[in-house]
Length: 528
Image (cartoon, rainbow, N blue to C red; front, side):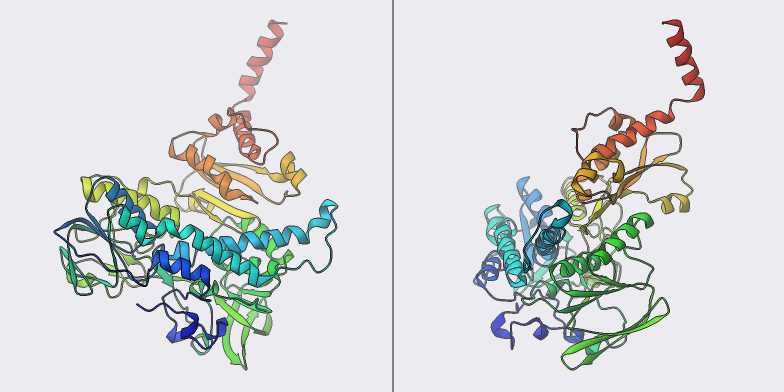
């Protein structure tokens, strides 16, 4: 495995980063500055010497992303003899090219957005208070490096884990080959994650483009940025780069943005993106790409209008492909699909009973927190013959746009598709005091309950900190608490979370039927 360093390329400029057919799936440590050298020293030390395996391992884990690291640390903490194999950077996508760097950039972009809108609060900001993109990216790299010891090879070695850096391949139902070494196992876990995939867009293979695996190596702000795909990554990065000063064109084949989310929620985020300067070309048809000198030209039809727009950089944020090739899965009876990943049952077992899988390589929930809790299931079931089920997990998620969209459970359309009768309660932030005072009235909390009860079936929250607020609902769903209990829980005033408590009040008012109200009136009249 060869990491890409600055001295390995013609320039530190991202135009020299691999793309198209030659696009590397190894993260590019660009620029190779002190922060990225610190990151590398933690998550893929150049001088690392693999240990000598001795005897059979209780567990061999392939992949040191979230699922692999949680499985490894948990098993080792319980006294298991564990080996961990990683071919690239420990920490996986989340640390290196996903959650951590993206939220570092988003945090900076939100500050820029707040400054730009300061006049609404009676605060004048001097002209020229623009974002310094190189410093924004340097800050991100510095903070990423600071976090990286948590996922480091040295930390896991100190936990008693045998850490192997290299390519892993199954050679039998109880052995894995890493270089010249053979690791024997009682149980194994596939936690190799997923990578960005290239959609079949005419001309894509002829242009240089970015994915999440190369975007965070940029050192210069693109004057014009094209983004293909208005899913979570596309929307987050389109808005962030627009707030940092790029002219952004966001192309989406479906109508609007975030098509899987609640339509009312998606519309709010779509308007917010456009207010922040993103040009949204939704219902895009006949998208074609071609090189135009040093730029990329995007040709697309949107709502009957033909656009032919040059951009300096292009971000492709459509699709993920599981990392299943080269593992020798065929030889050990592990069923997999190149697009859907490794096949597992509800207990995270593959079609080989000695081999489990967790995380993005096998799940439709491609979230760090989902991988974390799948790993906990694997520990119980692989080491202790447990019977924990992935279907029992209540998994929330959040898209970190401004405002954020957080969701857990069923959407209204899913309830209809499955014939589940529901009641819906909505509290708009336009009627919540704290949101009014903060100037954050665009959004809502929408809770679906099973018809005639307070039992929560699903919730969508649209708010600046929706990702923090959704946990109250997730806790309630996980432990069988309904809206009635939420309504009886005191929330501090004024907070935006008060919107959730008000939904409890809404439900309680439905219990005041005409008959009950009549009885109350008679009692109160009698006791006067």
